[in-house]
Image (tube, rainbow, N blue to C red):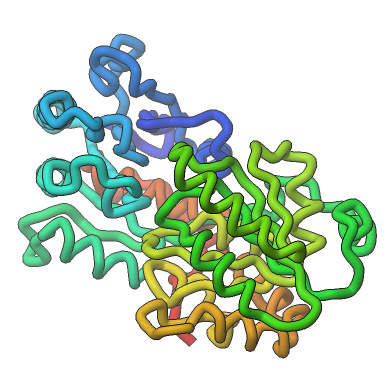
Length: 380
């Protein structure tokens, strides 16, 4: 049994060495007596296969896409049954199971009904579900039909930590704008992998309706769909105020795009948790985004830049209003807000979730200093 004198051991699955969220969480957990091991979804038994190095106290599931989703429905069933078997064995062995739900379904939804079926069963095999905001909590409970009468997993809100210290940030606004070749005009930025659910086509269409001086940069790896990629490139080429960088962005250049922008625009069609919003806030950027998923909680410091995606012309109107807003002040408020999501407090709360899942008696738990506790997301 784990106790404060003995570090907890947790298996992250799926784990990605270049994912700043997991890197920051892993490093912060180390300061709270939690040793994180990583699992590889390509293993024959991605969960139990890692037990050959010793049985962990907790298996912490993150993104399930590679564990559940395939374009072949038969293979998806096999993947789902394998995961359910492995998690059932974990429960029989007394290993806690925690799942941080980053998205309700795979964004491209190759097998949505099948995936939802297995995700609901996975949730029933978990000791705890971790959500990054209260808004996300309600949506996940409904989607996964989680019983709230004590017969299902605990549902816990733990904020997504900031990226203030994750990237270099020593390039001034002036130097960043000179690097991009822009002057004093308002600069909007879309940053991240270009995928259908991210609404980049809608952003380009809305921006093209704006009059006057303004710039839009669309930066990130391009679509996998050649036809959709060609349509997006053609639409961007119709307005010389739009610049595109459809490629992987080196880490050293992230600060240049962020610091040159007045506002980050995230026109998602759907979202549960957004690391992109956290990234923009960590650079002190204003964020224009729809009022869905975690965004109303995370961006509560700047509610004036949130829009209703169900309203016609809402994105265009939000861009128009953003041009008249004090975006520097909005960015400052976002930065102040995101600093509240410190990794030390998040790690303390995450360890408490692990202790619950592993059945650590209260007398043997590590007490977290009250000053290190990150605040609950709130609406303002």
